[in-house]
Image 1 (cartoon, rainbow, N blue to C red):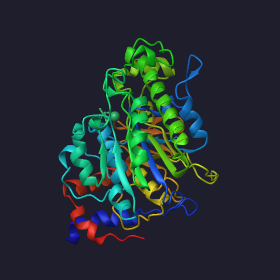
Image 2 (image 1 turned 90 degrees about the horizontal axis):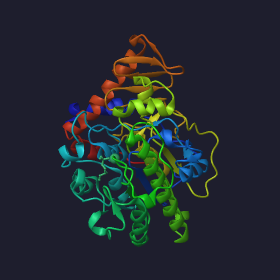
Image 3 (image 1 turned 90 degrees about the vertical axis):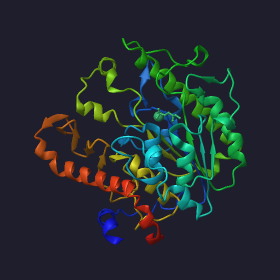
Length: 408
Ligand code: GP9
Ligand code: MN
């Protein structure tokens, strides 16, 4: 029934942004490796603790990548699963609850399914129980060919702690499976060690604690540092195995790690007062696209305001797959016609000039609170976009869209 879907389609078509011709297809037929970094916020990048880098590997990698410095997480109560939902569908997660649980039986047209038609094999890697966040069920709806979960790994007292398998052995063992996958593949890795309460065994401490009065905050940097090391070893191993050159990498943070309960320590650490403006800016997560052997194009604006909703169209365009007439709410990060705007799940937003959060409107360049009326048009726009996305999920509207899809 057209009337049910047309407002969504009209909105999406009116906001379509074409790919950047220079990067369209830059990853065509290459393997894609997506890495979701547990609880990793952007402020750890290029920051030092007692003179030592927190993320030495990522800092280096970022220099040889497109690093998007104003990229925000858009998750809600579904945390990691919400970020996965954003990644694979370019739809918003729900205002409450976890869409992975509540709408796992919907029809979707997710990345794994789209690229299967282009000959891609898809796999998710995560060393937790397969039913956590209902992943085993939802991954099938999203079209994943294979899910390597806890039971596929050799886990023992030596290589597990806190939430489970540690990231270093996780990546180590994963490479053995990766080598066996049909190519080209789309492989999604979800790390785990940097999860609240951020505890590590002594032998895995690679950096000292910071010294605020908040143990959680102090420990956070150590677990981030540990995951950075796991990434380094993962890349080293991919190089040794001869896989690296044929892969394109997308690495991003799933959501915040330090909640607002730790504002005091964060104020101490960053030397600034926590306002809704500052808290919102702390919702930035790392995001980079690394293409081996690629000479960076200088015409790309990597400070563009963006978010997880933009991952899918960016990935599809890199693979040389068009997104016109598909139901995706995000926009290619490389598009020359990109708007500077991102809407967070709670209706907060960030544009080039404005930040809106907790009912307050700020002028972005200096963080001064201004009259809410200045934010009004974007408040309405964000509300509309979130509502339309929710309508797709609540109404299971892909039942009607799929047959109408036009692929380039
Ligand atoms: C669990 C892991 C963490 O498998 O993804 O989930 P979170 O608590 O961050 O949503
Ligand atoms: Mn998470």
